[in-house]
Image (cartoon, rainbow, N blue to C red):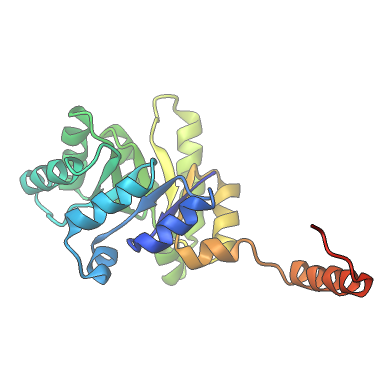
Length: 218
């Protein structure tokens, strides 16, 4: 499973990219707003920092305007993936933008049926929001499993499953087990994947024993 980082913080992106642990970036209007900077500047800087796809989201809700915004976002850099919502106008825009050779990430997906429509519309990525479904007392990861089953049953399904609204390291593991192609993860959660109390305990023990020897590795 590939990792995208869900942030518009360029310092975080550069640090994680240098570590070789991310394959792409996802942003949204809320994340862009937190930067306080123009969206074109932010997306361009991110695209220059990483070779993988960088999702940049339209803010329009009508088909015609989505096309205009989508093409403007795609003009920023070759690795921009245009994000559109899982609405009827969004699926129409996905089809039109895909036919123009652009990668489209259909976001705010909460059902397998929406994922089916996105795939039919030519989406490169479908983003089921597992955390927000969990917030409602539903099983968000079940949607990922359903989309995976549908994809496995239909060889024409070329859309990658991008598990989104990831809140915890457990979500990451569950997404991988459910068959997601990608998980987009906040920087803090991504770093927490490396943490385990037994690792910390074992390292402390090794270092204490090594310190008693008085040796140095040089």
